[in-house]
Structures are given as structure tokens and as C-alpha cells.
Length: 202
Length: 202
DNA sequence: CGGTGTTGAATAAATATTCAATCAATCCAT
DNA sequence: ATGGATTGATTGAATATTTATTCAACACCG
Image (cartoon, rainbow over all chains, first blue to last red; front, side, top):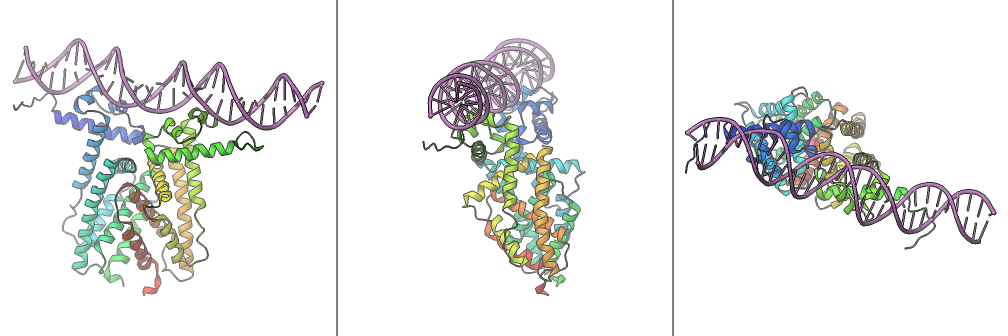
């Protein structure tokens, strides 16, 4: 029976609210100190309401991970119609964005915290393996395009993409866990592309 | 019970035992699910004994972090008297070591788990900032040597070292949190050194 | 009414920490 | 040397605290 939606407060709306609260609590306390109560503190309604929308903490966290990864993936592949090198540049700009962008900092922190879980939780590892493959494929497609149109050297797109992604992961990790000069990083990433990929540099 | 006339049972010995147990529990459960009881399960003596040697969980974990980072740093800078490129190769070999080396896997996992804490805990961030600086300086020294003796191009050693370190961090992270082909990574790291650093290509 | 969203208080379970008691080795006074 | 006091290590059980989860009751809207 199609029971119809009321407007009191869109059920989906509330679920999103809980996810946002999870994001906020994660940002403030980190994954290891993430508790339902702390999530509740970032949630305008009652803490116990969470259990009306989720079976428990585990399910909520699993949903949050999907939500975050989907969001991250949605932001990919919208670099416009630039050349391969420029498209990599756009991705770098987004990933190596300044520390003072709180949005980006929160995102990085969430990714780092959740990813660490993947060391012991097979479900998390599965999620991140998929996400990494997705990201890597995007990068590989760009590199392949560059190789095909002659902008790039004749490298193995998969290998370069794997490396690029590892580096991106490392930069994000460093940015959210240590004090590092990211402007240096951005410039070096550019230099990597120039020397390793661009054919005209030689 | 071969009780020689040693002191009760080497206090330092016991402390090391607790740290090793922490290592084991961390490997099995990850940082977020690390509890004193689980550490106790990896410790031959009573769980409550931990409180005789440490003020509490926090102090133990802080000590563990120092212990791990010191250990990591001790392993650095022993590449023998090779050329700069080869010394980087040795470091890569150690860092990108195969998944089937359980020692290395455990170490990476501990690092990833503890590092994630640095997103919210200032003391952890401080530790990792120091550690990263240490590692980066080693790398920079190698690169500088290469630049000075003409093996490498005239790059900025600090910038390259920062980038290298970010990449190393990323590779370690990926290896312990997702399924990735590490032989590809190792080869690409070598290619990076060749194209970005080695001068002989010109 | 009947169902869904919402709440605060209650309960259950996990976790950290303390403690009194025991043991074994060392020290010290005879 | 010998034995009793002293000290630190060790234990299991008890307690305190935190955290997850449940539940009965209420509000609202169809």
C-alpha cells in the first residue's frame, strides 16, 4: 500500500540531518571517539530518534560511508572540456585546496578517519577498494586521452593513475594529520605532470 | 620457571610486553576498537597490571605512539653507501614491501590507524608533524646530495622530498586500506625518480 | 482512530579504572 | 647468615563511567 508522505518533516530530510550530524561529530571528535550521543549533539532533534531511522550505530556509519563516497564521486569528472594536463590540474586544485577551506578540510578528515577503519573492517575495505578503483579509472581515462592525442608520453595510463591516486591520497592524509606546506605540494604535483607526462618537456 | 637472580621481572621488560600487546590488539581490532581488555588478551599477564605501569589508556597510547615512531625513525638512514637514486630505491623497497610481509603490514596498519587520530588530537598531530619532518629531511638530504653531485637535475630538494613523502604516505595508506597492485606502484615510483630527478635523460 | 515522528527516561552492555590481597625478591638489623 | 620488614609486581574481583539501545508515552496529521 502506498502510504503517502506527510510534510511534518520529510523522512528523507531527517535522515540527511542525521548524516550531517554524523559529519559534524566526526569532524569534532574523530572516528575513534564518535558516539551516538555526540552525533546527537550535532542533531537538532532527540538522540534516540536516530534509532527510529537506523538500526544502530553500525548501520548509520555504513550509510554515512556510502553517502560520503557517493558525494565524492559525484564531484569527479566535471572538469569541463580542457586538455588532459589541465584536467589533472583542476583535480589537483580541488584536492590540494588550502587548509583554510573548512569544507575541504572536513571532507579530508572524514575520508582519512573512515579509511583507517578499512584496515580491520572488510566491509570498509571493500567500499574503499571500489571507490579507489572509480577514482583511478577517472585518472586513467584522462591520462589515456593524453597519450592518445600526443600530449603525454607513451606511459601506461593505469600505472600512472595508480601512482597519481596514491599521491593524492597521501597529500590528503598529510594535510589533515600534520603541518605541511601545501603550496609546495601543489607546485611539485605540477612538476610531476610536466616531467613524467608532458612530452614537450624533453 | 628458570628464575635467575634477575630483578622481579625486568620492569622495562614488562612495559615492552604491554607495548607489544598493544601492537597486537591494534593489528587485530584497529584503533577505534582498541580497548584495554583487548590489549590484555594479547598480554600474558593480568590486564589490570597495565595500570601499574601506565596511568591509563591515554598515557599508554601516547607511549605506544612514541615507541612506534622512534622505531620507524631508527630504521631510516641505513641505506649504506649507495648513490642517491639507489638509496631512494632502498627506501621504496622497504616502504612498498609486499602485502605478504606481516611485519610490514602490521607496521603500516598501526601508522595509518594512529595517524588518523591526528586529525582531532593535537598531541598526535604534533608527533606526526615531527615525524614527517624527520622523514622529509632524510629524503631531502638524499635529493640534495644527488643535485650536488650532478646525478639529479637542479630541483628544490625540500619540495621534492615533501612530494616523495606524501606519495610514500599515500602508498602505505592504500596498501593497508584497499586492494591495490603494489608492483605497479613500485615501478611507477622508480619511473618518477627517473623522469623527474635523473639528469641522464637529457 | 491509526500510523509515523518524536521525546526523555530507563535499561543493558561495554569499557575504564581502582583496590585489597598475594607473592617474590631485596634490604637491614641482628 | 637469618628472619622480618619493605618494596614492587601481580592478580581477580569490585566499582565507576561511558556508551549503545530500548521503550512507553506523547504529538501530529491523515
